[in-house]
Length: 91
Length: 160
Image (tube, rainbow over all chains, first blue to last red; front, top):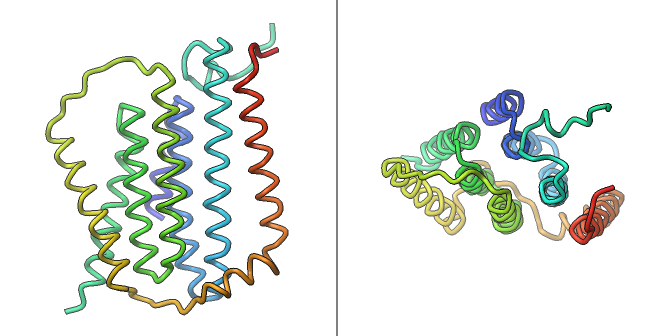
């Protein structure tokens, strides 16, 4: 729970999208640990299966978000990594 | 004396310290590296809880592939060049890394499980192909879509 709380603090307080993504990964790590601990009491095999699926999903999520961020920088849509820059503004 | 419970407390404290360093570190590369250490500490805790297979997959897939990808991607983002010459921080990181890796291999090799879970690998495979089959299919489609989307974005010359 403490790890997830630290991750939530980081995700809310940071402005860099990469830092926010890293904080979300910290939340994921904390929740996964808590989930596996709770699964021991009900269905350990089901918990392990779901944990493996969640790890795969997290890897896909990281790959896609980083691809989008690098593309935004490379094509000049944003000049620097800041969440305010990523918000589309009406002209 | 049971050594597993103090080891679990130490690994939990290391995991919390790593989470704090991920959030507070100024350099993105350092943050990503600390996330890798957090993954290793978490995998050690999984091994202690008795989930050996999940621990191995967490190290191989999450730490080995995802965190390495983050480090590579962050180096492509033209982070402002700064000189980090904090010797104390480097020494502490190296020692923590050594302790976490040692803890992971030690807990894995000794089979030190505080709450040994009797999970057969065949039972997990049965879950994959029975009740978890829709989730596996959706995950496969999502990963394939992410792969195709990533290739498309990387090959595009201009965003319209």
